[in-house]
Image 1 (cartoon, helix red, strand yellow):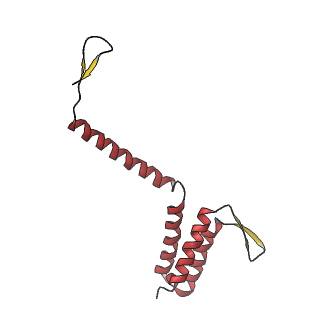
Image 2 (cartoon, rainbow, N blue to C red):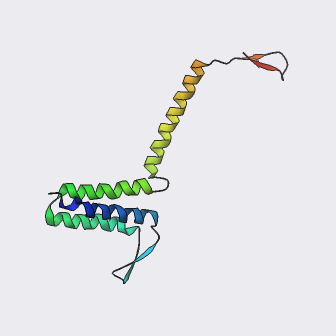
Image 3 (cartoon, rainbow, N blue to C red):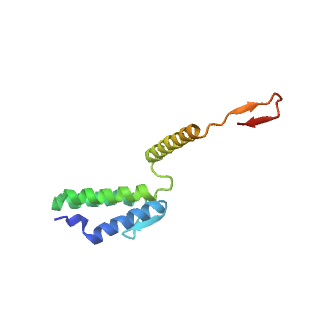
Length: 123
């Protein structure tokens, strides 16, 4: 049971995904003959996990390896996936707006004009 997610296989999948994410433009000689960019190893890992799934019928293992590759990629991508960045910025905007609203309610500052354009007092 869970033959695809056994310790060494999962650890190797995460390490290869981390390498492929951080140094995606590095050229690796596959079988010492075929030049291949490192970023393609993300897809190769998922492909190999799917081929292993076809032989052992371990759906949880396939989903586990795929999730490990996706989470590693999403975590190590410098700016994060574009969708996550947009969501993060939206949440940060909501939090800042809520904080500003709370601060405005808590501290009311009124600017009192003293008549001349230069001298203003905060009251």
